[in-house]
Amino acid sequence: MPLFRSPTRCIPVALSVTLSLAVLSTTVAAQGVRTADPRASLKGGVKDAQQAIKHLELVSSTPKVEGWFNPRDLGDFGFANSDLAFQKHLVFQGGWHGWQAWDISDPKAPKRRAAVVCQGGQGDPSVYGNLLFVSVEDGGGRLDCGTQGVSDTVSAARFMGVRIFDISNLDAPKQIAAVQTCRGSHTHTLVTDPKDKANVYVYVQGTGGVRSPNELAGCVRSPDDTSTALFRIEVIKVPLASPQDAKVVNMPRIFADASGKVAGLWKGGDHGRGTQNSDRTDQCHDITAYPDIGLAAGACSGNGILLDISNPANPKRIDEVIDPNFAYWHSATFSNDGQTVLFTDEWGGGTQARCRATDKPEWGADAIFTLDVNRKLKPAGSYKLPAAQGSTENCVAHNGSLIPVPGRDIMAQAWYQGGISVFDFTNPAKPQEIAYFDRGPIDPSRITLAGFWSVYWYNGHLIGSEIARGLDIFTLQPSEFLSKNEIDAAKLITRDELNAQLQTKIVWPAHFSVARAYVDQLQRDKGLSESRISAVRGALDAAEQSSGGPRRTALTALATSLVQDVAASGDAVKVRLLSGVVRELAK
Image (cartoon, rainbow, N blue to C red):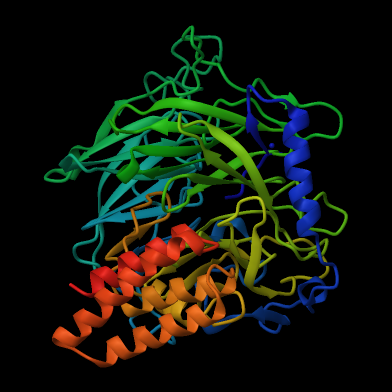
């Protein structure tokens, strides 16, 4: 999400910078940057830009509606689209001008269902039941959603924080709460508590300057004051029975050192010759919560951090890392098993061309970490868009999500005008791209804010928020990297809601598509012999065509025989997973 700063990348503080550089540069060298890639030389334009697409289908491309763009400047920040949230058949799209809701019941023809003009910054949304939460950080944001801005230095009309809308009647959404914070809300994280069904929590990530205490009491600007509004996040508690009573209930000092000094992490600066320069860690840009495992990952200026959120109202830092290649820690994504964390670096703040052939592939990329048994982050690999982009295309790592393919860690990620990249990081040391989509620059003559802010998998489709153009919807296509069975298995996962910074555990049902997905993976990775793969497929086909007792008998026999395959398999874990699904199918 664009920051008007020159925002750094990631290694455990206790490890050496030399080790990090060796691990990450080796990975990037193996990955390479393909300047001959078709994405490297696409013709530009607004509506007629050339496109490059591989193993994806563009289902629909819905342009912006009149009044929601500046026809004289398509890169106008005041009308830029930002992030997405999802509920049933609706997509909520944030932006500087306000928020919109799109009905995607027919993904080939999305229809705008609601539009609320309410300015105040990038306006990232999240949704829970009848509540829509929207971040506000711009100093011109008003309590009343007015468009006239705020002219006074200190004003009671100014709003910076998190708005809460009642969307039970989408024809007439109503703002029911506006929780003020000292630095506003650049982004926020909706956090649920498995033990508390009466409340939800919102972690507020403010990245702006501190407001005057004359405007909002308690806003201390000095970094040397122990009560400073820097070096913290805010936690809002939202009682679901009375969301209008939402309020800040904690301001945890998640950057403090062991002695309690609030400025306990990265002090700012570079890491030595040839490394990135990053600001001090006095803020988080994004925090991704994973309540099912009691953890959250924070991308926090000069550090990546790991939080214990077993008590959501009081998150506690349990580890932190730095990376000499990172300019600005931007966002985080967990693998489904919670054993891998992928952090992004928004080098250049999202407004600069940072994917050129001359740019270091270690910079403006993803850093991948694994968790050890003590919940400590260990550097494991790196990934960057493997196609050079032009000097008029703002491009850097940005927002994405997991694609729920069983047995694999696959992510779809936005790269602004670098387009969309779908890649597998199951082996974090060797991530591999498997699909992509890209357009030429929106303006070949100058750098202009455009491209994909985010892309998320939601109920069988990839849905992308295009900053200057609108809303795009894709489907995955089978390839040598991803089979039809794997895609079908991913489509079994449907949700009533999806918020980008709130991960929930993916649990696949016992289904023949899931079993076949595992078989395809075992064949691709040579985990079983070709003859055994053929026999397993035949047994699955025969069982699916039968029913009742004969089906149960056939599946039970297959599950038992697969257990015997474990010892001789090149991928014992995958064979066990396959056997488990088959056994569940037999019940």
